[in-house]
Structures are given as C-alpha cells and as structure tokens.
Image (cartoon, rainbow, N blue to C red; front, side, top):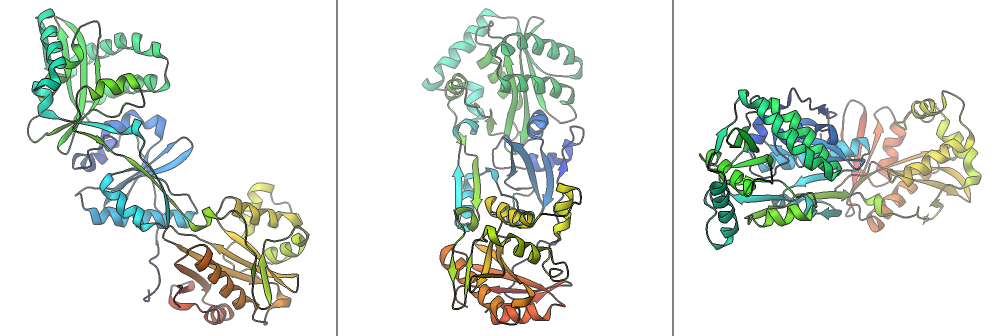
Amino acid sequence: MSEGCAPELIFSMKFEPIEKTAQERLAPYFAAQTRHMGDFSLAFLFMWNDALRPAYAIVENCLVLREYFGGKCYYHYPLSRTNDREEERRAVLALEAEARRSCEHLHFTNVPKDAVPDMVASYAAVLLTNNRRWRDYLYAAEDFKTYPGKAYAGQRNHVRKFASLYPDWSFSKASPSDMGAMEAFLLRYDEVQRAKGTYLAREELDEAHALLPHLERFGLLAGILRVGDTVVGLSVGERCGDMIVVHIEKALREYEGAYPFLAQQFARTFCGDGVGFLNRMDDAGDLGLRKSKLQYHPVMLVDKYNVFPKRALEGVTRIPRIATERLVLKRLRDEDAAVYARLASDEARNRYWGYDWHEDYEKDASGEAPSAEYFLYCAREEFRHRREMSLGIYADGVLAGEAVLHNFGYRAEAEVGVRLLPEFEGMGYASEAVRALCDYAFSSLNIERMEAKCYIENARSRAMLVRAGLRECGKDDTFYRFFRTPEM
C-alpha cells in the first residue's frame, strides 16, 4: 500500500461463543491481568454466560470479549496476555475498522481508567460513562486478615462474637467430597434470598449453583465455614494477577458475625504468595450492599468506563443543501422517486457502484419487482440510521445523479461516492459534486480525511477522482484508492 492510504482491515473478525465447557481456554489472559477488574475472570463469564451471551476473539494477541446488554452489543476493552499496552491499542484500532466495515455502532465497556485519555483524544466526539453501580470494590488483602485499627473495630467485634458464640467453628478448603454439603447450604440460603424476588438475585443464585461442579476444573479457591457439622458460610474466589476475585460469598445471617468471620478466614487461607488485593465485585446499585461493602473500607473503587465513540454523521440532523457553480446537492425529492429508481436499478451502469441491491430486496420482498419508491425509501433509511448520507445532484432543477457520504470511521474519516444518469455524463458534474461534498465534510462535519475508491477497470472514475482533487494512494486486486485532506 502506498504512502497516504489508511490501513485496511484484511479479515473479518470471527467471534466465537464461549461455551461453558471450554472457558478455561481463556484462563491465561485472566490469570495475568493487572486491571483489577472482576469482569476479566473465568468464573464471571461462566456465571453470566446466559444473561450476557459473551463471545470472544483474539485480536493483536489480545482477548476481546463481546457481550449483549440492554439490547446493545458491547466490546470489552482488549486484554493483552502479557499486559502489552501497545497490543491493546492496536486491538482497539482493529475493532474500529471492523465496526466501520460492518456499519455497526461501536460501544466499548470495561475500559480501564488509564486507557480513557488515549481513547478520548483519538475520537472527534465521544460519550463517556462510569456507572457507580458497576464499579468493583478492591480491598487490601492484609486488612481482611487482621481487621486492623479503629476503622475495623466493628468487624473485630463481630469476629470475636462469632468465635465466642460458636466455639466449635471450623474453616476448611473445599474438596470434591464437600459438594453435597455446599449444594445443601446454597439451597438453604436460597430460601431467604429468592424471597427478594429481584432478577439479579435469582440469576446470581442460579449461576452459583451451576458453578460449584466446576471448582476444580477452573482452579477456583473455595472455603467452607462450619459450626459443628453445619455449613454456615461458603466463599469462592479466583486468582487473577495479584488479586483474588470473590465470586461467591454467602453466609447464614442467623449466625451472628458469620460474614466478617467468613471473609477473614478466606483471606487468611488463600491470600498469600503475591496476593495483594481482594476484589469483591460491584454492588449492582443495591444500597444495603453498598453500605456493607463501604464498611470494609476499600482501597479503591475500580472504575469501569463505557466509551461510545461517535462518527461524524451521528451529529447531523438533516441533509444539507450544497450549491456549486452549476449544481445543487440536496435531499432527494419525493417527485424524483421514479428517476432515482432508474439510476439505482440500472445494473449495467451500477456494476461499479459496489453494492447489489437485489440481495437486500429479495430478502424483504421475495423477489418481487421493487416499486419506484423503494430505492428512495432505502436511501432515507440509511440516513435515519446514520449509516450514510445520500444527496441528489440537481442540474437546472433536474435530478442528474447521486452523491453519497458513507463508510464513516471513528477517527474523523469518511468515503465519498458518486453516480450519474447516462444523459448527464461527460459534463464534469461528477468531479464538481465530489469536490463540493469533500468541502462540506471538511467544514461542517469536521472530517479530517476523505477517501474514495474505484474499480481498476473503471478508467473514467479514476480520472474523475483526480480532477476532483483526490490523490491516488494505492491499489489492490480490485480497487484504486484515493484520499484527500483539508490542506490538499
């Protein structure tokens, strides 16, 4: 590729569903993570598989997770197996290119705080959120071992009371022989929790039950708190870098002090050998849970940003009117539906347009001939969804062709295309329209780079793009490629 051409995505990313029987393939990425996010863990994906429908791809040596929430598709910030930040940035660029290729809106989630400035600076416009309810609570592991100082006086009192009331307590690492006892404990715990009736509570309990048989396969850390022979508490965690993510922490509240006692015993048993932190996940907006988590004095609430980059067309509310010396580029008129249909459906003339309208139409109408209004409707739908902007090219008030801004990228780039009715060719209208649309994009849409392409065998379009002020920058087996920037 010659200098000046933007890098191309030469493959289509393939996201594979994360089967519950195969999630351990992703474990090395989670085991090495330094972001301190509980979402980047094997058991989290397992427990929320059905709700979020996660899938994954390996991009630039990074793990990229995709999930669906609230009807939208989200991409987790890329996770490098070796914590290489440059690999992660390249994976972000690849995701941008894939979204541009597929005309999808791009939503990033679980973006770490240190990556936000670079992402914000890269986009012309961006929506940024950091929802309090989803921030993880990160604690110093040593604090849970001893509950030191005045701040933890309440927890120490609860621990002493538990030990005094239940001197026959014991805490042990779970083994396969404990499976029946753990399941029986969760069933007893369920009786109270399911009465709350919330979706998240039910979902969490269902997934906790499902996770238990996989403790050994996923290498999870599980501890059981007993009073005599009765299980009164269960805690399950996962080692991820220098932290343990606590996925399950359940205790019977009728045993006074069970929760702080369980948390302390878990930390004393498992938080050695380089484990500096406990991640006890988010509070999901439950104010009672929030109060409880804050009373354990986190060293940090782990920010998890959502970053929604905006393409230039998303801020446009109406199709503009652009006047040149001989032409007017404007919204296609209703009364021009038949003429526009002749332009859009002319197969011989549109073989260089790069889009076969038959494919979409046959899916919708079973091959019936389209009405004159069909093509006009499609053009307007593309703008309504802010995928492209189609303008009619009018010469002396007569529709002569179409100019289109499309293929908008996330770093202030877009592509221009033009086609004319046969009776209006050879008059220089195409290059005049392209120049005008480029100038509009630079001045009104803050586009920094206009791109275009034409089929190699289409010599007339190649010459037209050069006359319109675009510079040829490379070719592949199919296209010549062009670009123009505001200073050209």
